[in-house]
Length: 246
Image (cartoon, rainbow, N blue to C red; front, side, top):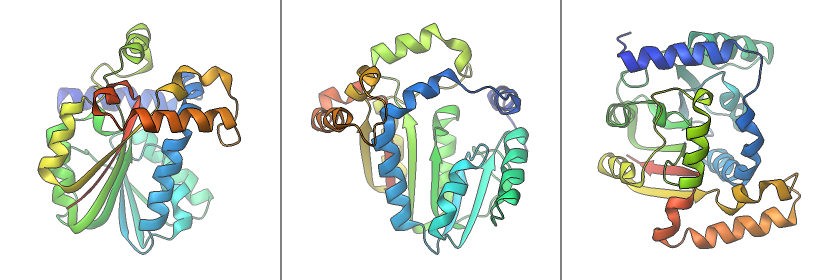
């Protein structure tokens, strides 16, 4: 597996991260993206059955395991971190799930061309050379296949200030996507759709506890949806979902 200096740093960072028993503090904010996760899961629930699927940058395999109930024909998860893959294999065996996991470089995999019907990932592309990874995804996706990725945006100044204050919470080379980065996806895929999430739900996250049951969160989410209809306000979003076809 050929690795660049950045790949090696990312590998080291995530091996250390996955070896730790402590949880990242940033997880307290994830409830603000409850509607994003719901949309992501619902999309895959409708599209994953009987498909050959790749979890691109699978980490410890949690998402692959969550989606196993929707009966994909085959699931493979790849990640650059040996520690993450060890945990993914171990937990899947304990759960008696037939999911395959491999250590691989998402920028240049050892996978054959046009071998998957659907490729998905969560917070992986912003750790990679975007041009290389998008080209690689296109190579290994079958014609007519689809992709769906969840990624953070690097355009909200308030969120960027928090990132500036907490550099140790992330790897030194990660780069939350800019709106212009989305043009790369559009160059390689057709029917590209971008969904924006997390502005008011982030700002007011202290004012609700369980987003699934919170009327206030529901209102904030609807207001975010309205705001993001206007392209000039999309820079305020924390995260996006990218959906496209080959």
